[in-house]
Amino acid sequence: MRESVSPWIPSCNGSIRVELDGQRTTSDSGALLLREALDNSGVINALEDNLVDRRHPLRIRHSLASQLRTLVLQRSMGWIDLSDTDTLRRDPLWQLACSDARGTTPLAQDRPSQATLSRLLTCLGRNDNIDAVHEGLLRLVVWRLTSLKHGERPEQLTLDIDGLPIEVHGHQGGSAFHGLYGVRIYSPLVASLAETGDMVGGLLREGNAGPAENADTWIPHLVRRLNESTGAQVRVRIDAGFTDNDTLEALEDRSIEYLGRLRSHSGLQKLAAPYLKRPRGRPPEQPREWYHDLEYQAGSWPAPRRVVLVVQERPDDLLLHAFFLVTNLGKFDWPPEQVLALYRKRGSAEAHMGEVKSALDVHLSSTDRGASTVQDVMARNEVSLLLSLYAYQVLHGLRRLLESRTHQGWSLMRMREQVLKVAATLSVHAPRITVHLGDAADKWWRTLLKGLPGLTPLA
Image (cartoon, rainbow, N blue to C red):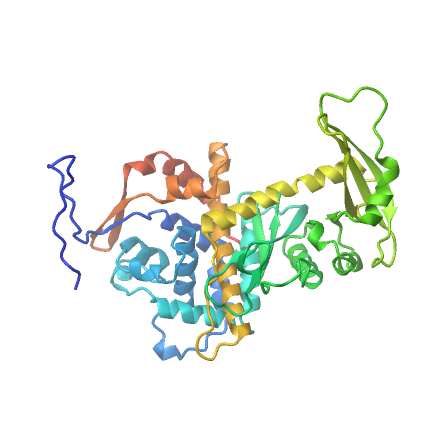
């Protein structure tokens, strides 16, 4: 039974009485908007059709679909722990948003427990299911790319690959202490589309993994699946940690265009030396830069590759600055200044990666328990990472819809706090449930509801 709490009277006004009386109220009415977007993507139905559920059919209380909705929607709204389901167990709107049932039935249903959701992560991390979870994220990307364009698919996409170090607490299998960050971490790879802000894939790696470890197999696979799903020509943009020969060779073998930065070393410095001369005349008051198209063969490279030298002159510096980009983009279609302009757009990708960490507070907490192996722990944590990217994609879909309607930029945090975290009261009359939104919904909900039909379902 719920503990009785005496009414609280704030000292500022004795006429106010605050009571915990269990009324049908919620602070998360935006979960219904997220449910609408999630249903339009079709990802939950696709997962349910392709996942292997080893539970006995007669003993199932919570379907895979309802559990998946619970995890994705709660993470989208900022409830990131599995135990948060217990905190929200009496919230009527969460009962409605996550249930498979129609009518008033969800209001009488129990919500899945922490133990149930923990078993779901184990189920999703099995070898016969993990590929379906990766494919589900790609489906969300395709839906997001086409939902506001009447099914029209992009012709070109740029895939950005980045590391996303995640601090862990305790002794999760596969994590390791990293001297640069001073904490125990996992070292996952995340792939995104800088032009659109979509998160395409995530790959969990051990904490002591090298920057380019597994990149030579994972990146070509992502490019192929993205090309098959969208029909777009996909090029890859990487930083200096991924421009080892194995990764570049894997991309070249599959005719994938790429662009990346090279780490400076003595061989490159020797190549750059003839070009590090100031032009005649007085130093400029504004920074300037120039470019040189060169060929260079590192010791580990089987053949020379195209390298663009970028030289920068800054008014207050005595020395010139220089860095190198390596690419297989054609010289005729991609002169050096365009190569540099394309590389500089990586800043957008890094901003989106920052949003994943700040808005979703990604943390991986599955530990060694029972007879779990390191592989089991990492599989559960990889599923947790992917579900956080699912949550990002659903939020991002609504964010882009709001941007198209308001013609202003929206961060995920601002959208969650100003649009989705709106109080509401529910009333039930016969078969009808009415959600009465608070005044805070007046500013943006009208705009968003008018545009919601534009989020077309993915066939």
